[in-house]
Image (cartoon, rainbow, N blue to C red; front, top):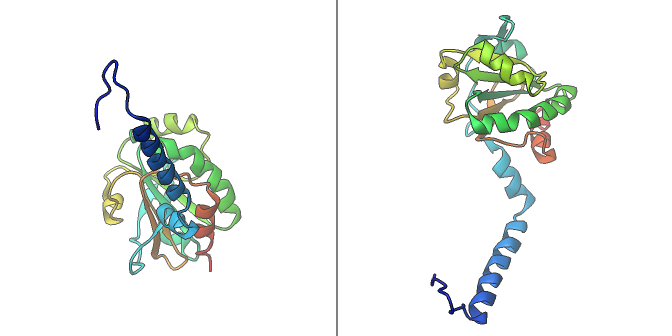
Length: 185
C-alpha cells in the first residue's frame, strides 16, 4: 500500500475500491451459514473416545469422581486463574450453568495447578456457583489431552468425549447451549 505524504492524497478510485473490498468482506462474514457458525463454537471429537476417569477434590476438599456422573451429559472445563481467556469466560459459564443444570447437565470446572486460596479469591469476584475441582499436579488435564487453556470437553451420558472447545467461549450463547443439551439421552 502506498504511503500518504503531505500534499498527496489517494485517488477517489483507490478510496472507493478499498471501501468496496471492506464492505464485501463484511457481507461475506455475515453470510456464514448457521451450521458453520455452530461448528466454530464446539467441535465433534473424532471417534467419541471414552473420557478418562478421574477423582479430584473440590474447593471444600470433598472428592468428586467423573464416573459418579455417568448417565448425565457433563461439561468439563480446564482453566486457570492466570489465564486471560479463562477469566473472560467465567461470567458466561455461570450464566450457562443456570440453564444447563435445569436441563440435567453437570458442569465441572477443573482448575489446573495453583492453590485453593487463589482460586477462592478469584471466584468470589464472579459469584460462581458451579462445582470447581483442583488438578494440582495437572495429571487429569494431561490425561484428557488439553491442548491449551481453556479447553472444554462435553461428555455424553455414556462417558464419551463428544464435543470439544479449545479457547474461550461465550458459554451462554443459545446455539452452544442447544448443542450441549442435544447430547442428552
